[in-house]
Picture 1 (cartoon, rainbow, N blue to C red):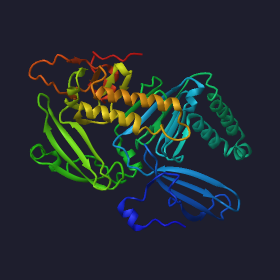
Picture 2 (picture 1 turned 30 degrees about the horizontal axis):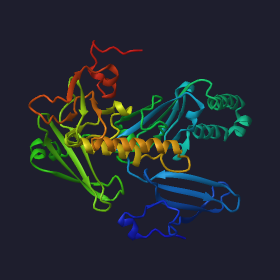
Picture 3 (picture 1 turned 90 degrees about the horizontal axis):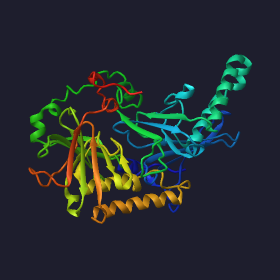
Picture 4 (picture 1 turned 45 degrees about the vertical axis):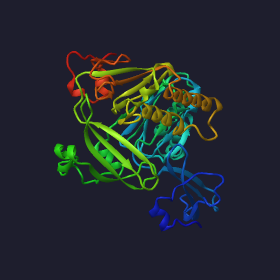
Length: 447
């Protein structure tokens, strides 16, 4: 039986990259109770790191007496800063083949059937849309024999609902699948990546106090969510003159790390809060930017015509609410996809390439198609051509909150290759920014 050593745990190396060549990567075997026959069976645990995805715990139970078995996958990575909600409009049978990573904290809904699978009622899984439907049907059918004997009317109603779920797999009518995960660790595949998926909407949201308690990142008796007990973090003079340091965990290897935070004045723009994390264990570095001010009255749309490699050195401040569009590549990156960043245009393009190509969780494994790999490879090559000045494109930063910035190298004179447009936000954009309480008579919801 394998043993997880104390040295590995403390060193943060207990999770190893999954590889067929690793002969030492044997699972940990634990004798455990079979919940079917109540005899002793064996649970195998494999702590591994899936390439381009994250750390996971794969567990498999088997009973040599009754033959019952069970398999489960759990995320071992960090809980994300924001929750995520995927809304997919299923239109064809091909949509049923989309891969889905569903964390146990996710809620699954099909509004057309008024059907919902609450969080923490199913274990985490890597499946497809069709697999999710099959799992829901199997769960409803599990206790049907008992219901038919004790409550035949209820069993008949559930049988009728099961037929409706099964009929969804024929896709005779379109239906909507919603996966909402406060941990931010669920995914729904975009088969046309890096292009925008018209059938899939991805939005991020701030967790409620109750969701924080469910995820175990807030004590059950902690009802005070403010930060009044941290006067140093709220002292603007301290933030302007000093670099604040606080402990955190590395987003890559989960080892203890430190995050530096400072309030910085961006020339010709405004004050922003820059947070940088450096990990001594794996060398991972990341930076995040938060606006130091409130949401602007008008949104901002910045369009830069990239004509020279020197444009790559322009400073870029991309807020969490900013979308990045490259029309020549038919590419659009939604808000919150990369979080807030203060970098250069070259750094932003490299981050986009890493997100879409290198760190895409659906570009590896048996289900990956050659066509998808080729398409993503071509996208990565085009990004490199833009960086080296071999491709003439427009880069658009569209921020409805007005908190993004692209350096004007001709300042204070106008930049001939850059336009800045101010616009009034739509009702839907105010909804996304959480400005519902700021509705006026000028905003009317469109049906």
